[in-house]
Length: 577
Image 1 (cartoon, rainbow, N blue to C red):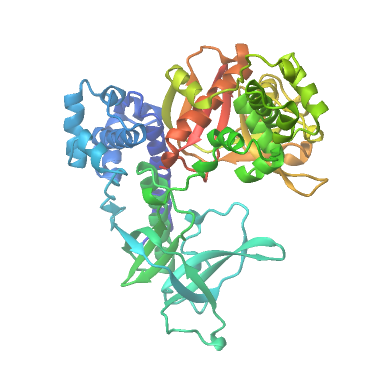
Image 2 (image 1 turned 180 degrees about the vertical axis):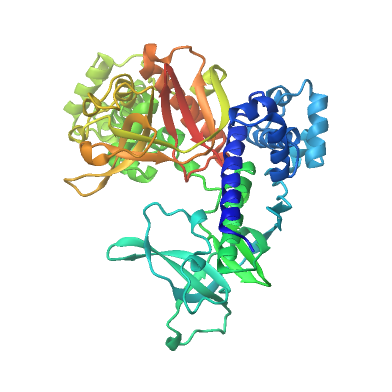
């Protein structure tokens, strides 16, 4: 029988090995000498080598090689090229890299790139502290389940990986045997989300629970699932430890080394049969990647305006078509094109008017064709723009930023890397004021100022002078209109959740999810000498150029973000793992 002491030792061992694994994964681009790693974690080298092999099932060097090959395979799929990978991952030449790659995946890097859309998962460990583990992938059709709800809990701090097998933690007279299925579902009661654990059974098409049973009837989404299992015997404490052991392995090891994303449209659930526990994890497949609609992306905005320029279009109507609020559309448009959408529409109309006048079209007709308020309004705006009246129009040209040409010209000056980032927390304030609703706000200029100078609310606090600051777009409710507005927010990185009660209401706390990111930086040693210009440069190259070419790799469920660390600016685009 498992003792409390033995269980405690095994959990501590797992926690320690999880720390080591996370360190290895985040330092794969560095030399990983076993003696140095042992020293980092305060182990004797020979003892570390032995416990590592006992825990992971393979020697340290072989395990690192397998991690590196998987990361290199992932990068091959992201970059769509093989060139140079052997140098990045410690191989002297292409031949030695190809040999190792073939041994791991059964095919050359060239054939892998041609034939595969995802990196094969690393085989599961044979045993966890002597308990056999198995895993298989299964496509599951949507089905229904019925069961009783255990007492509700609030969502604050809830982590599914820590709450599997919840029925074992709350034993009662009805839980002498395992339910056929157990899962968490979220319901809104008393106006706020609350979680309930359901323990019950799957039900077939003709299996309708009676009213007397007083059961909840819920739907389990279909999709691709990774299904893990372990023997499930012994006392309740032994069974609870089994579920905890398997859950920790799935979320803290297997998911990490295989770059797996849990599919948010599915449901994590447990089943119990044949003295085994099965944990079902919905996994995101390449063919189901969430991608923002490219037909209405940034690059299509000017195309849409140009196509409808003879219509009575407004910034509001274009913003609605693009799926943005009017204010956010104006801010982002200016960020990419160096002018407000109002200015673009007017300049485009004036330019086309000038072209029409060269063909001897009447000034009055041109004014009406392009929806100017009056002939006088048209003549005044034409004079302001070109320095002459319409009747005197000569050779004129229209200039605006061509994002496609800009990216093609400048992408060679951007350094791109791929990183597996840990979750990161920061606090921030909006960079602009809402009363300037219709102003042509310059996000790069305002973001640069907030990056380089502390916002007044942080002066005199422990958050002043931070070495790292981050920025994202955030959805913020407008107190006057009640509508949701998008604000660009900037603020310092923090190591722990701050005491928000001591900070002004305009300060908000954010936590960005970890995972794989494409990370962009300029070739400058110091970006702060002209931070606004570098901000705009990287925005166009990363958030427009590279992203337009790689939408199928973009994980739209996580946020893009910007970081200033020291004197360097970094742009992060989340990737499907």
